[in-house]
Length: 255
Ligand code: HEM
Image (cartoon, rainbow, N blue to C red; front, side):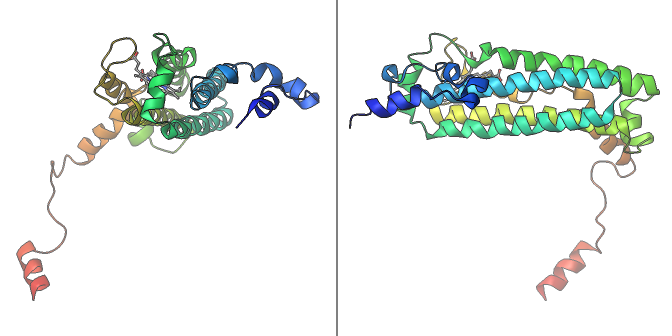
């Protein structure tokens, strides 16, 4: 089938005000010309990556605003903006699945186009790996030290579901969603190139598994373990059953 006319329409939009404001003409030239695509999957490969970069731009921009609102202790703004970040992280994770419709062979053809580039070089991702350090510093300064609180106070001793608690929970949710993005990305690699292979930088792909376990805010995760140990100290590791004598219960079940 001759697709030339369809492709020309896809690539050259009619620019009314909507198109002008959103720079749709420029946007549609950010992908390789359709005539030069190596196969039918290269367009989705480029678009998914580009859209993910845009979401990361918006997440980074939003987190910078969050830093500002944390400094002002404007908790309502912090929580609303972190809610936006959480939604964006879920979108990013869901969108990875689009690429699972690409066959391993078609990916190999696309891969030949990539030079030795890899997601490790993603400008948006690199910034997102850095920003949590600043988030933690602001949280510590304005939601812990300024209020003479420790993480243990916020979660246990002085727990009141107050500002420090809701901001801490917003941070840990971001951390969890980021780990889920990395874990889903590992599944995508399972599907496309296989986990036993090497990246275009020559590194074993399964090194990514360690990244998927990386935690931005270890103190917020550790407090849960500390609480379980402290609250469980009275019974040790395994406590007595709360139902009646096990033998009697089993005999009753048999009869
Ligand atoms: C078929 C699709 C994909 C394959 C086969 C793939 C493969 C890989 C491989 C092999 C690496 C390791 C690179 C290295 O060690 O140098 C990597 C890293 C990465 N990729 Fe992908 N990727 C795919 C799709 C995506 C998409 C859609 C994104 C969107 C953001 C993405 C973002 C990243 C990021 C951020 C890293 C660094 C991850 C980390 O350090 O945890 N990848 N990818």
